[in-house]
Length: 121
Image (cartoon, rainbow, N blue to C red; front, side, top):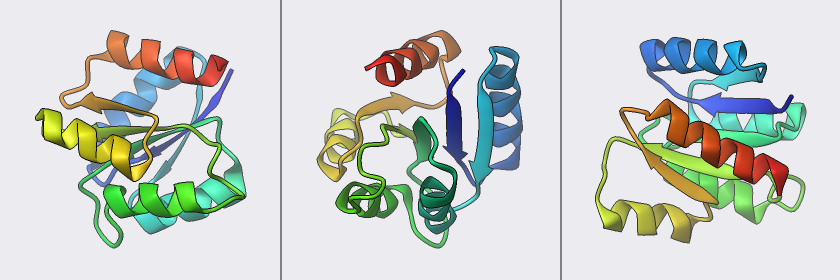
């Protein structure tokens, strides 16, 4: 199964989603801020990244921009995650380079479909 990097600063969110993904057979690694997420993209070569947008140190918006500008990691798909469900937030995430977008609270079935689609392509 695929290796998922989950970049999330909220411990409860990290714990809940990582356990659900692990039960589905995914290997889940985690980072707590955008800079650590970029570093782990380089060192761990995940198959996909779930990137919270509201992160400390380096937010998810800028981390996504930097990841997509880096030739060594820019092919790793990124799904932007945010509690802001406005169409403008989705557009901003896609403009930053995210491959897809989903809202919190997480609809697990919908997120799984997006993960499976991006990992398969």
